[in-house]
Length: 90
Image (cartoon, rainbow, N blue to C red; front, side, top):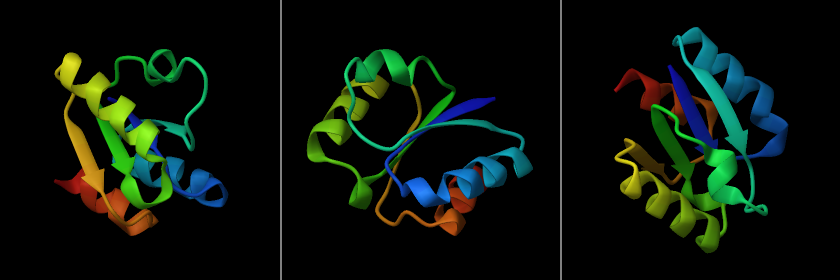
């Protein structure tokens, strides 16, 4: 299963990927709004947005993308590794 993480801290990227791998998920991380943002998101099985570490524009694009493709979306305010683990557990 594949998930896309939008936001978070760049220095925690390896821990985010490791936490996802422990739960049996492959994780793609996008830390900020870039050109062709929707194309980089792709078509994952789930999307996670850390809302406190991402721009309003990136959050808006992510929500639109998820809703248009019926992708499960998790909006989480904190950006810790434990928050990500909790998301994969639910």
